[in-house]
Length: 328
Image (tube, rainbow, N blue to C red):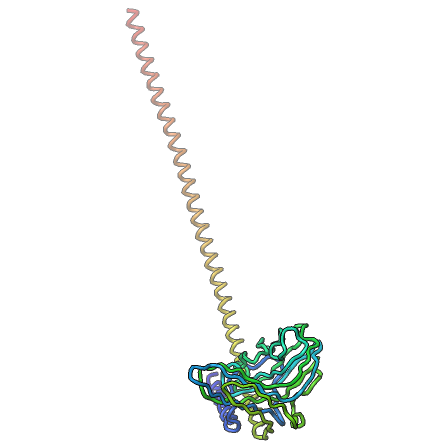
């Protein structure tokens, strides 16, 4: 068992090293998301942000508008995309845009009630690092869980970041792929999946603070895709190993609980038997005491009767003697 675990660990380490050699910004190390697996392929969007802040500043942000959409959300719409990034902090990996028709907000990120399959809200300030840091994450956001979002227009598509960190200078690279709107599994809108979805004319207005950002389209090489596939296979194997470990641990806990229950039942039965024995002994002692009390009472009556008889006899003798003396 230990030998097989060592072999598995060695294989996993080798796969990770290969992936890192081919695609340096990717590394294994996050829980897999619930839902569909990511499937990066063909072209992708590369969002590079260089953060540089003055001493004591923690906040940075940036948004780049990529293309117009004018898509109206209807009941059952779901936004899906694949994403990964290489800097472990909150504020990375989100998408955004303007939104019209919502009483709550005029930006996509703040549409009410919208969060992904791991309950992480849309807002750019939230943390996806548990799911997308160093590993591809397929994000699924049900847009109309809140009925207020039905009929809202997603005006344009943006990538954005809102990192909050004590580090003053660093670079984060975020990759996006397979950005679509689906409804009951059917694609309603393709925002970006391949080269043909990269607009020739892009809106470049870019609100920013304490950082510089670029967005470009690139195409995966065969080596990168092979590395991603190997990393995904290793991740699945790692998840299966964790699942088996959790199952073994739960079985062990269940066995311990059962054994503890048996021991508790035995202890309870022993205590009850001891209490029953104690009650029986006490009852026997009480019965013996009752018998002794009854015997003592009988003896006392007998003594009183004997003494009373003796007194009467003496009185009778005295009377007889007195009568005889009187006759003389």
